[in-house]
Length: 238
Ligand SMILES: [Zn+2]
Ligand SMILES: [Zn+2]
Image 1 (cartoon, rainbow, N blue to C red):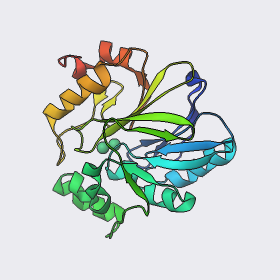
Image 2: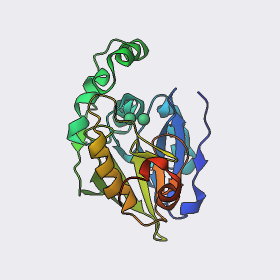
Image 3: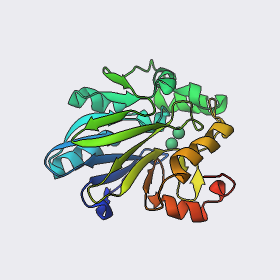
Image 4: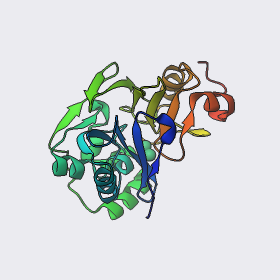
């Protein structure tokens, strides 16, 4: 699938390239405080490697870490390869760690069969260097402070990472917690609707309206826009 990186120019001091990858168009993000320096890669999905390399060479960036919002295959597909190519650690919450070696565990049995046809028979392996993250962690990477919030519901080990740009705008890498106009599904194994509601209240609705949301699928949005228009957030108290 062809895709063109769209630079997020509204966030000024943080350079962000969004790269939809694979048949499910999972968004991979490359973020850096400036060109010609270190960067972080969020959710390198299927076919991400070539696109990521292009962004890296265009902007003179050197990855120092991979961050995974959760363990679903469409978000983690290229994590091992990126990790090995650049010699950098992959960050993931421990409760989704098992999905790296058993991707079918995170989906229903019918989809798991399709998945093994798509992915090949395995065995699937963990990246060489895996760092477990937990809620409350602050990761200092590429000169940026990224806070980790544990947001279970879509998967048990879903997290969001938030960085604040130099002009004071919080930017959240939301994975499959919330999308423009929708939320992540909770009907896969490990999904939990109640936990999802709590995560949405704590990690999304409690934030200032200006907070930018960069979701795991689809276009960027803001907390304010979702608070006002997202039907799935209407009944959840912030
Ligand atoms: Zn997912
Ligand atoms: Zn996804």
